[in-house]
Image 1 (tube, rainbow, N blue to C red):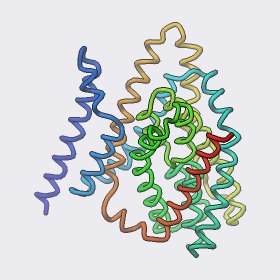
Image 2 (image 1 turned 180 degrees about the vertical axis):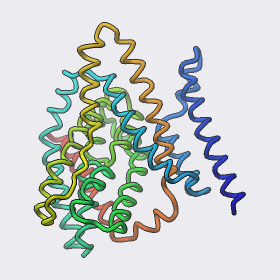
Image 3 (image 1 turned 45 degrees about the horizontal axis):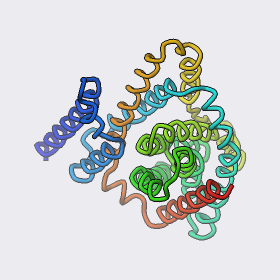
Image 4 (image 1 turned 135 degrees about the vertical axis):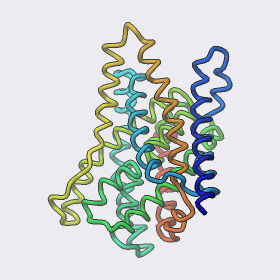
Length: 325
């Protein structure tokens, strides 16, 4: 058994090293085509394949590095964005963002509590994760509702599985529907749970889609704060600590620096942004490697039905809004 674990760790290290080498080949003249073969969906697939065949080699490291590297990557992406363009994108998506957050929480309550008769905490956590920003929202709301570890695990596992699926199928659906970069970015930002999968799907679809998706998604993520406060009153758990996603504010600061301080030296912002894209791709591997057969077993039928049903409703609703409004 120990030999098997050591072999799995070796495979893990080799995969991470190969991904890093391929990504860094982009800085070698004439090797851009080779480096571009490693995309966020491919990195996620490799991580998933490793986790489901070999298990989790470094579970604690995976959890920590995926969270930290994602935040650094998102901040780095800010150096590739312009404040005026970002405000325009955020403004266009603001009204529907507000509507989608409220509607998702209400529909999630109906599906989870009324239709499926799930426990209050698990149902609310899945709804919050779908409405705002996946695992980050669940982690912030969990302490507020005094959720048990089992309830947190089920909600996180449900959202995580759906995020992995979204990163693969959303770009394919977008191309099949001939969606524009802007429309796809808006759709991904509203209909996909976690920031990681939103950014990954946007990057897979195109440059403009990435910018639009990131801006609207981070605007949506700020709803963690008011929803957590409202939740504390609904669940009568005043005084609970709320986890604020500070990296979002650093992302905004990076946009301002790129627009007003690095305007005369755009190469600096482009270099930081390029490195952030590479670290994001590597993050996808770590996220995929965090999944395990045990995680899939934890989900169960009813939470998965609620998660999928809510996901389908918000995805189709967003598409309808994009095409008819």
